[in-house]
Length: 215
Image 1 (spheres, helix red, strand yellow):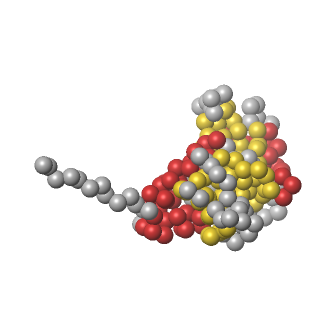
Image 2 (cartoon, rainbow, N blue to C red):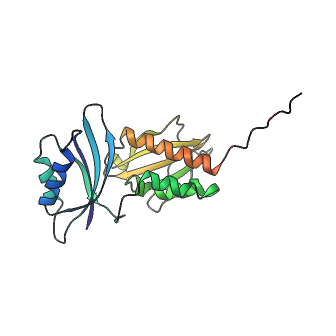
Image 3 (spheres, rainbow, N blue to C red):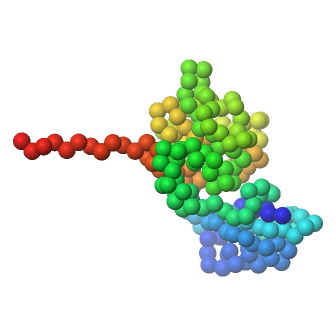
């Protein structure tokens, strides 16, 4: 059964190897690793896709990681998407082939890319907002928020669902939601803003500027 582990560890040579060894000794196989963030305080945050054998509990992996100096398990959950991690480069490569459909396609890609539960595209209306494109688990009552850049939004469901969003253009934004965490990191906000900006440029290319004839 696949699980996704988010772990903070010292950003020094050998740290990831110690974590990988501990995970293996706990009975899990590592399928993929993605570096999520390098922090200024010397800490790295990695996402690790694990395959647990039938009957094994993820608690054993958490305990093995916590036994290592400087290592903290931020989050572990069953990874419904399974298979592999959908890296940003794969998203970019696919978006460049989609033209005007890039923004709508991005909404479907984002939950896998960011290990989130849902994504939605929201437009501003007189009533506050309307969801115009969404994945299956997205709530229908999302409202538009005036944003200058990708940002965290107020939590939903009594704090159980963490949200962030990035502006598409005037009166439009993309929203991401995670149930139960983890918190969206600054690096994830930067990635979200970049991908939304790229998809917008592909879907709505600016017309070429006119060149004045010499007088």
